[in-house]
Image (cartoon, rainbow, N blue to C red; front, side, top):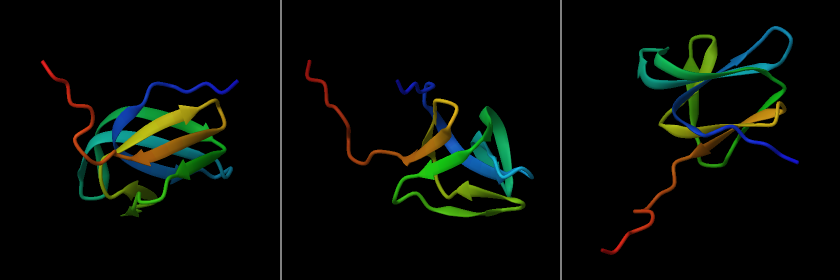
Length: 94
């Protein structure tokens, strides 16, 4: 059974650790190459899956997404980084 944590939304910073695992920080903003107001961290995961269309750029010794993304931890195996859905989303009629 696959379990997922709640989804965080922000800029994802991906750091490769010395043992080859990845740590993903989710920040509300970016200042230069640094995360600002880190709202979540996913430590020492074996992998990171980035969906097509999500662009990354260098940020010091890390990579970061060029825009705001959704970040979800899947089990203890990997972190999923997805782009924001386009369009208006559901429209509620009153």
